[in-house]
Image (cartoon, rainbow, N blue to C red):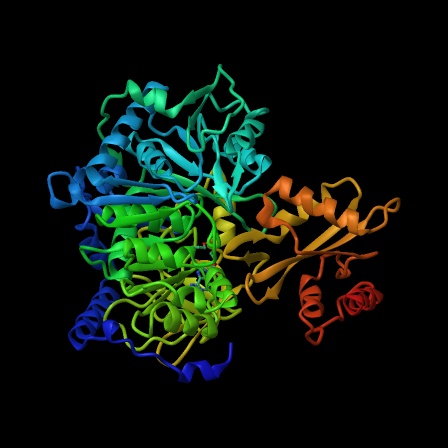
Length: 634
Ligand code: WT7
């Protein structure tokens, strides 16, 4: 990040009405002075069956927000809109990749969810049971999530791009009883048979009792009559099920994300705090208007999909657009044509997508009428100032503010982002922490600094409550110093704006997908010819980072293009195609310290063409020459 960007700021009038600014500054100030009171006020914006008795009880690292309050997330997204004009408003507007369209009003979505909740109950699902959801971006994905929490079950959504093995691991860790999937989906015109992957995943698991299958593509699937049930058949008999009364601290969902070890973490979110935070941040960051047609392009398999496709927007009664397929199918203007057609007002997408659109060229967006757009959001990875400006100029016609939103699976909701009335925007900066969020940068010694580790110093309502079944890992990963460590590096400028540089741990971000280097390494070493593997993220102009793997083979094997290919396929099988290394380099030995730790930093320096840092701890200095040699051959 260059300091020259700090001088360039963009003033967008819609973010900067003077009256808004005064109001917003007052809001920041108030939240700063009494954080708990601020959140208590925000909590009034959702419906409680029984009011809470205490805003927060905090016993580091265990938080209880809105203690003894009772509510239901599904009720907040649906029932509370009934009998208001929102009931007739579109809740979901869906377009399939082949151009199919479906719409559901809030009333209709409520009915669908109530009935599917009844189905789940009849299948024996009880409060606290886990339900695995492995679906494409279709309205039923939203229905499945809302039905699960309606009856007090805990959902774990697994992104449709995960392999059978990754799905199996998550199902097993969560001990899920029901799996909800579909016959398939379409991606770039190709049929992808999700049911087949789901079948493989549960072949050797005991926990899944029933598989509910949604007919999406009507392609034929293998049927296991002892477990499989068609969604549409089950729904024929269904009655309406009411929303269960849940405690504020009852689990709402588990979402698996990558960490610094090989095993993904099941991040646990609870009901009350999560609903308060996502409802508040959706309203503040996207400056919600009554007639918005809102499109967050994330898949429901990621946290962005949970918080800003489902819970945040629906709790606020917004019309949410969902798209099932690829951005370049049938042509590279698919997004822009849909924005024109549905008059989308808010677009929330990832820097990777923006950089891809940049590469495809302006002609595509310029060929569509994008005048309905009002706000542009960015999430998932640092947005470089060039991409920010391109988005601002070409998609937003210099009119729509670009809100860069920093947050994580663990934070549950947006933490750093501009809101209406905020001062000038600076391309590349997520600006300031939201009201009620205590973001602090600290140095190695844990002292406040202007550059260093990004931490959150006070609890916030949608903070993770733990790692499923692993309290020790929860404490050790995040709370070593009594502050929440985000794992990101950041800098704060003289205006208090944050500039996030990215992960400082062994987590990489490829196209906005979070992956643990150890996770990929474990997949590689589990191949019988591989002795050792080291994985790093290397700068990539579109994906942000690309995966490079360094592999040493067992004595009997030699590296070849065929083996590289086989290893890539192996990683795809273990995790999913999106985790395939872009490049695999075969080396005799990995660079290690004398104590045997792999020096990934050194590999990154060589791969990105930097001067190699401190090598004094390196056990065998000759490996550096070997690796450099590989790069020269390349
Ligand atoms: C990591 C979290 C937040 C939902 C999607 C990703 C990176 C996310 C930004 C941003 C710079 C960002 C961080 C973070 N990240 N948003 N606006 N600017 N970096 O959630 O998979 O949990 O990944 O994504 O490195 O730690 P996730």
